[in-house]
Length: 545
Ligand code: FAD
Ligand code: N01
Image (cartoon, rainbow, N blue to C red; front, side, top):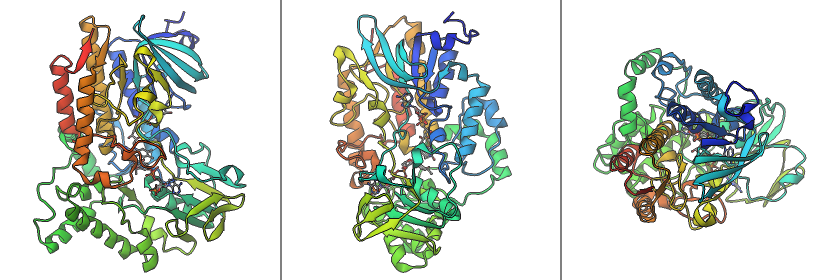
């Protein structure tokens, strides 16, 4: 019986649901839980073999969150908040993965998740008012649902470097975003690492521990703040647990989704000595958000930004022994904070070790991967293993990786040809009953994503509840509201220094991708108010029928 949850074959035999959710990471797990609470039938489809999303795929050595564990967690389960024991200030990938697995067990989520199942496309059947979802994998075939919710992640489609010859390499190669489950042993090996974003910067010191040599191929140096990570402070745990509701509320009202007071002063209104003193104080907290929120104009005023950028460069120069290497590691071609700043444990220190070498690809460009290693314009670097820390087709990679078709067979990929358009980052005109968790046009990656995700899931759940209670079959963003929001998202970014960096926020890391700022910079608190007002006004800007 396909509707009997106790029947073991039912899970895979059933094809009709109220809601199909794509993705079993932080977003998909909570969405499923809320849908059950509404009494809706739901299934989650997931390519991977386990829950966790980001924290399932990114198992590279050193993978870690840069939001403190007590804040990078669900708030919907107050008992879990009290019970779960985080061991470190910043949690490692295995710990977050264990946490998400625990949530799945605790709320009995697995029985409605189909793993090893990839959604290849979805078509809105206008006559039936239903989504027809095509899948590949273990439980392949077509499913149908009234609603489709994408929980596919902003950083879930790994990007390969645009370098020929990878297939000829005789050694082993790995992408940080699709790291093998089994332990990768680098001991005694000559390892190359391409990419110096957050992933590369976390991985390099770990690999350098075991490898015979590490060659870091750097195209663009990045700003990185030391985490000062360590065992979690028991007093902090006690304090946060006692005050969780209030602390969560502060995070939700904030700009970046962490409970830090908003900065009130400009970097330019204080003396140079005072600035230096205060930046040191913020730096010593081991938090990139603390540094970014030292002053209120770091992301909008080039002079203010320059002060902070120079401060970070001085820290790099302080750590790295060889002044030439230090200068190559100093970022100069984009303002501080306009590419996501990194957080590291011993990254710059690693370059003081004899077996670690920095190759400046700006001076000697990467030409190809060869059977023996990596060829740059002046040398062939012989390697036994190669790590690609080359990032992701962010924000739209996974969404447009599915062939989604709305009214009149319109392809989502065509609609987004000049950059994604969306109403609130939640819905798209012409695509009824489709919701996108942390979709383009929402604050998502510019915040603690645990906060961004919970807010989206709760908003979607409330919308579905409204539709159910009013007997409404369809909800669809109207084109004018979508256009207005999309303009607002782009105009908000245009007033910031973000436009000056070739960042993945702008799609600049993927050749041919339209250069459009895809994230809402207004902050999670402001954004939540907008979403709440829309709902309170009877889903203003949506057509309900
Ligand atoms: P994901 O965790 O990306 O999960 C999406 C899931 O959807 C994946 O499992 C994927 O397999 C599945 N999927 C995608 N397409 C399909 C399809 N077509 N069919 C079936 N399944 C599909 N955020 C922070 O706030 N702080 C941090 O410190 C932080 N660190 C990060 C570190 C790394 C290495 C990375 C990559 C991201 C980090 N992020 C961080 C962002 C992180 O992605 C989010 O915090 C969060 O985990 C996203 O959860 P999600 O469920 O929305 O998406
Ligand atoms: O990816 P990235 P990432 N030749 O895109 C280089 C989150 N995250 O996986 O800048 C040579 O930042 C590329 O060079 P350039 C976080 O949101 C968080 O590191 O294009 N180099 C760059 O150096 C983060 O921002 C955490 O010139 C090539 C690197 O590869 C996001 O995920 C940890 C190249 C890619 O950097 C993505 O981070 C990890 C080529 N052809 C990830 N192609 C934490 O919170 C690319 N590069 C701690």
